[in-house]
Image (cartoon, rainbow, N blue to C red):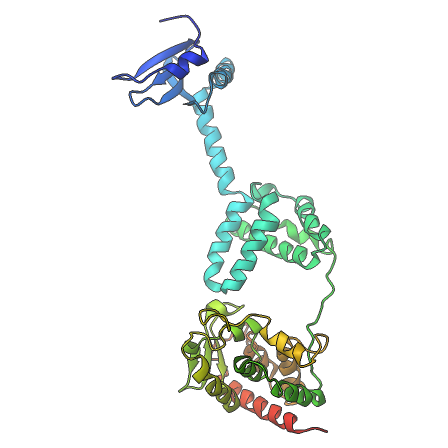
Amino acid sequence: MSTEKLTPLQIKNAKQKDKDYKLFDGKGLYLLVRKDGSKYWRYKYRFNSKEKLLALGVYPETSLKEARLALADARAQLRESIDPSEAKKRKKMESISLATNSFGAIGDDWFFRQTNRWSKVHQNKTRWMLDKNLFPWLGNRPISEISAPELLKVLRKIESRGALETANRAKQVAGRIFRYGVSIGACERDPSQDLKGALSTPVKKHLAAITEPKEVGALLRALDSYKGSPVVRAALKLAPLTFVRPGELRKAEWTEIDWEKEEWRIPASKMKAGAEHIVPLSQQALNALKEVYPLTNRSQYIFPSPRSNQRPMSDNAILSAMRRMDIPKEQMSGHGFRAMARTILDEVLGYRVDWIEHQLGHAVKDVLGRAYNRTSHLEGRREMLQAWADYLDKQRLNKN
């Protein structure tokens, strides 16, 4: 066995042979050159009178200098009566445990267990919240070691951008992950609970809406005067009648319309609450759909984009139409039809609040705390939507 030290050039020029061979560097360190040409650093040593072998890396990822440093660490462990191989195994297990119990790993596990209950939109928003606002700073941290001040420091980064609402939502999402971590034994408590009042509260901005009955008629007459695209005109008719969210309206598909049952069934994937939503169709709503059917029935979308039948109309189409009719943004928004219906159905027409909230697609529970399913009070809601459509017709005619 040669006592000469290896050189970087020797290692680089070591060629494969018919069988594996070793190049020794001294003190038990050698380079194993396999017959396929790959090169591995090994340390041969004895512990408790047993001969053992420790892998120190693969060349060229691990250089000669790095292999010698690793050798020095291993020999130092031996002097402390520590078996380097066992120490390496423990470190690997600790790394695996750390990765498995990191905030990012627990957060991903929590996220994927929720997705079957969430709409695609909500999934995307939550994923964005994790990947852009929480994981970059907390993802690799052991979830059990994250303190309230550390979490607050991350939330302050969001707050410093002026994104007050995002900071508060990030706190809520983090709290859900911590509580999930508690449930599976990954951590002992939720530190977000210690941050009550620590973040600035965003000023709630209510979307513009007309809720005064006497103003509803003028709005409807203005919408009726629209002279643009017949597809947008149909959407403008359907928006107040169904008071669904703007995204649900513009992405409506013909396959979702049940003409026989006179219902529009919006699939769970499109709903914020992640559950199928049934919209009973009044006669006025059915008539609006029948008017646009000959124009768009070749598209999957009821309201396709003018540029392509393969895409729904833009989220700006209805807003732009209202602006062209001189309906200012301070007066009415796309979401405003929902506030209009909620207010008048309750305060003027006297319908049950739980029916109204359920028809708005909100998560509503009965007196026993059970969530209503999609068919709850369906006949009552059907009568309510027809009464709503008739009320709108009366207001349209009432010019006083």
